Image (tube, rainbow, N blue to C red; front, top):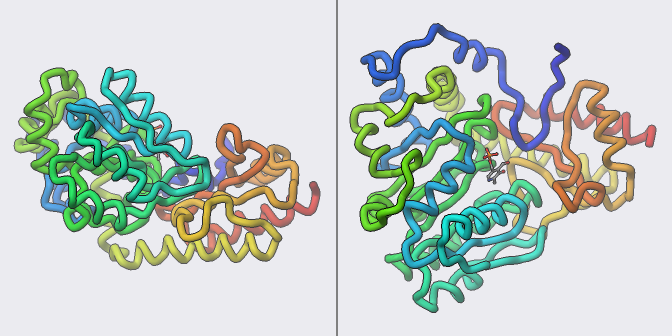
Length: 357
Ligand SMILES: Cc1ncc(COP(=O)(O)O)c(C=O)c1O
């Protein structure tokens, strides 16, 4: 099978050493070796997220943990912050779980501002906020500091954050920001295969969960917590991925978190410089652009699907605009273990194929 290098916003390129770390003989999940493995991952995750909270490991994609956030944390109702495909999905999840859900919505490319959420919280009708930190479909990164500051005025509201395409690529200080649930799947800035979701949960979120009776079964925080103290999960975990996770986390700390985050801003700057050189503009509103992926507006009106195909034939995979943006934008992801040199290789191929359009 030919190996095309992924510059799409997930799954991303997984390094051979990570694949190798996953490919080890299986163990049972009720033996001490498993607890040791699980117990090695959790403290490193806490360090990565700057938190003392417990961290659960769900064997599911991120959407599972998004549903967990709703089921365990929304009692009166949830405010869904909607700015693109994935945050819109969270609204849908909340509605389909029969929660009263407010739409706090902006058009694609715009960010959610604190005052927009506060307008809903002031009504006193909602006790949960669902915020996607980095909206992957539009390449927008929401102002988490500003929103977190506002949230301090509402101590009874549980703050649930999807950091699916930013966690491990951008510094997110969970405890300082007062985030109650912080989740992300393995296939994005963690640089791992899909199938595992990291979900850190505060005491406040746990206390809320205790007051809700229909939390469901698989994603029940209370049940997860009972097993977490034993460094286990209630059901069979993705053991292979935990081996990969431990390996990756050790690598993160070898690189150094600050160096890792700086590498991500260097990657972003490299991509933006290329856009400027080739006459494209950024799609998101200024100051709210994602660090881990670049969503560019198709200001040159090129045939994006054709270009993406040509680049793919050369062994590099980039993305068209998401959904309705298909031909109006394109996305280049630069997260996880990607180096500036590797990104430049991809951008070089993009330049060559652009000339053929
Ligand atoms: C911001 C964000 N949230 C949620 C999801 C859903 O993730 P999954 O497909 O892993 O369930 C994605 C997927 O790309 C995403 O980018």
